[in-house]
Image (cartoon, rainbow over all chains, first blue to last red; front, side):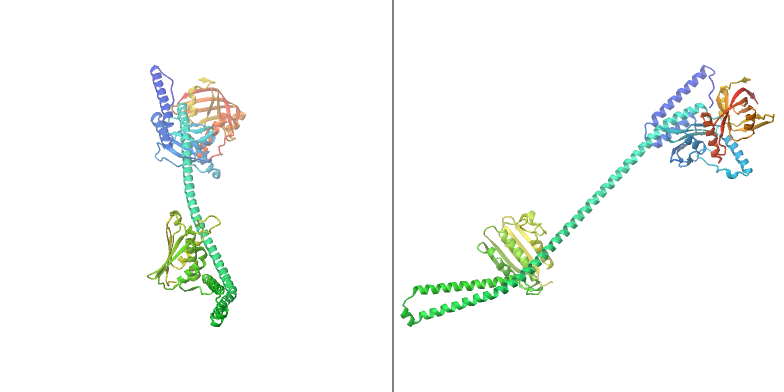
Length: 492
Length: 134
């Protein structure tokens, strides 16, 4: 491969043709390797072209792996491709080229290795073996005789080394050095672009994966938040319900105590009123008897005014007795409602409870709402009487409040197999469909802030549920509402 | 016989890397011949030899600056013989760096890194050069 001077025009033409061909190859390489951003095609193009066009049959590309090593990424013309093999920076021709970042063209390597091998033997024979290091096997031809190694540098940064070797006795020339330098320079640029592109693609993939992970995490988090929110909402409902129960229990307890106190305080004056009214009635009867006696009638003559007065006494007496009866009945209903004087779980006459509640609500009902009762034959139901009374109170209160002006409430009780069914139907304004599915939700109310707590029906629902019963509502806006309670007669 | 200037055709022979023979002589006339791994072409009138060990060759040229270098051209089957004279030594610069790099590259692969450390590049002026056929 040693260039000779031109001998004649023919030789000159031949050399010119060869040069032109070389330039064409170099230009093609430049275009081809820069038309792709994939590393493998770049390596193939460079190494194959070096062989096919310039006769460099054994070539190798190494890239910098870290500060201390180069790694073989591509090779051509070797039995063992040595892919993945490494070279330490500063060792051998390739390592020294990487260290010094200078091209090396070395010929008659075998002779030089033999020279150093002789020196090594002499040192070993002289007892200086410990000064010697290990002989290093580097990727490439074991019996290479010539080598050109050139650093691949982009903007002062080493990215690798490109090496060509030969076993041929003719060494590499300056011209060969020039060709390898040009190709290496183009290869360095193309490899750097491909590495940057690959790094960018990996980064983009990592970002996409991180984004996906974040998205999944976000969705999981949202789901967890939703679940937790539901749990908290439920806990809140439970808490409010419990609170309401406590308040009601406390209220009921207070009411019971109050009722007992009222009953006790009213008993004596009511007894006096009753007794006095009775005495007055007998006194009027005695006076009338005296006036009707013949001897008195003759002496007094007709006394229409006295007769009228006595009738007024009769009427007033009757009204007093009826009022006293009524007060007594109300106090008894109040006691029934609180049921303080009864054990908790018992067989109860549901009609009795219903009547107590109606009595207590009479002031809301009278002169406005007609109460129609269809009481069937019901067995006594085993239940917590105070709680069931609470249910009746809630349902009837809702019915009364739903009726604007005049209307009616129909109470129907029946027995269906082992259950008792109580229906309370009103002719009130009805419940809108979108509200219907929520009326048993704790806190739901249509009465406005501060007016209703929204807990009455949820407590009702819970009480019926605890009694292993069912509660169902049917309603139509403008047509009224019917509450249907079903209780097992004796399952508790 | 060509005197003083190195012809272009000797450059590839020097670059071939075939070890060369260097002959020196002490001040009291005792000759010494040794093999060196490389003769570095500097320019048409200068070559450089490696100074790695303080051996007889180095000692001789410090006493007697005249030396003779013989290069084998195994391709053309000829020998080049140069009469040179020691001029100066350099411990840095492009010639030193190139020689040092070459020596270290081969030595390190042979497990002898640092042992053949180049101490200096000895520069010789070429007094005469001739090609001799075998």
